[in-house]
Structure formats: C-alpha cells, structure tokens
Amino acid sequence: MELIYRAVIVFLVGFLFLRLSGKKAVAEMHSFDLLYVFVLTNIISAPVVVNNLGKAIIYAGITVIIYKIIGRLSLHNKLRWLLYNSPTVLIRNGDIDRKGLKKVRMPVNELLSHLRVKGYTDTQNIAIAVMEDFGDISVIPKADYRPVQPNDLNLKVKKEYVPIPLIMDGQIVSHNLKYLKLDIDWLMTEVKIMGEKVESIMLATFQENGKLFIDNNEIKDHKNAPYYYKPGEDN
Image (cartoon, rainbow, N blue to C red; front, side):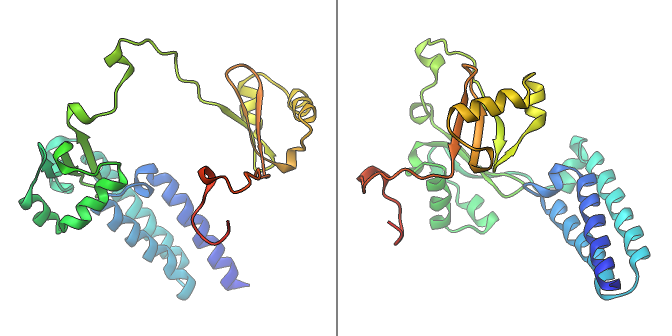
C-alpha cells in the first residue's frame, strides 16, 4: 500500500508542478525547457524507489521556482539570446544555405522531407526557411508561390465561424451549452429528432445556422469508390 500511496502522490505532485510551469513547458520546448522537464522528472520519480518523498517535493518546488524566474528573465531581449538558441536560416531566396545546414547538422534529404511535410517540393519557390530555436522549421514561400488570399482578389469574406462542441465521445459539454444559453432539454430534443442517442454520438456541434450537426460512430459504406481508398489491408 505504501508503494501505491507514494506513486499516486508523486504523479499528482508532478502533474501539479507541470500545470504551474505553464503550457510552454509541455509544448514545443527550447533546450532549457527540455532540461527543466528532465530534471523535474528525475526529482519527482525518486520517491518511487527511495523513501524521500518530502525532500523530493521540496527540490521539485525549488526547480519550478527557478524555471519560472528564468522564464521571466527570458522576456528581456538581452538575456533571451543567452538562454535560447538563435534561429538558423536554411534556405534564402531559393538557395540552400550550406552553413546553416552544417550548423544544425541536417543533411539535404532531411531538409527536403521537412519541406514536403509542409507542402513544398521545390526549394527554388521558397523565400526563406528557418529552423526556429525550439527545433521546428518555418517556411515562407516566394510571393508568386504563396496561396492566393481573398484580399488579392479584392474579395470580402464573412467572419469565420468555429462550430461549438456540445457532445464529445458520448458526453454532454455542459459549459458550452451554458455559454450558448441553451439547456439540456433543447439538446436532447434535437438529438431525438435526428434519431440518435447521446452515448452513441462521437461529436455534435452547434452550427452557425443554429442547428445541430451530429457525427456518430458509424462509417458510411462507399462501395470501394476510388476516392475513399485508404492505405493498408483493411479495405
């Protein structure tokens, strides 16, 4: 029982400290963020093996405070460049920067694969490609090869509407109903009209026209239509 107790405490404390650290520490991480997570992980996992739960929590708390302080300091431009790596240019005006690739130790074929993931197949069409300090690659195409924007055609478009989830994985999202000033009776009536049951609904969203859209767990049979092919042996 003691082992279970310590494991539960360690898990909950670790979760609490990561929440206190902020989203940045658990999203795309800089080298310092990654080091912080490694150190914190080692500290909070120690009590599972060794009986020093109290000290581990104190050390973990100190580590979180240090991380938060350095995070604050990094907001100042002069200190930021000391704590984090500078972005590295990999392609400029269609030309591959050999020094940049060498600096980040990236072969050309890996660069090309990153570009394909982002939808670019020809380096000549790229104005600039940069490896950011957190390791991701940003790509900006030349003006002639970027997607056409409505503003380019002097078109006026309506404001984008984001469908609001009301049911997810068979569970009602109550706070979204409250936000829309709707009640559960309205939702249940809509679901019943569509011949569905809440527990069988994967996703139900409130649409711009005030109606409910339902995506259930059923997959429609497209009778082997080529446009619905999926890789693998499950066709």
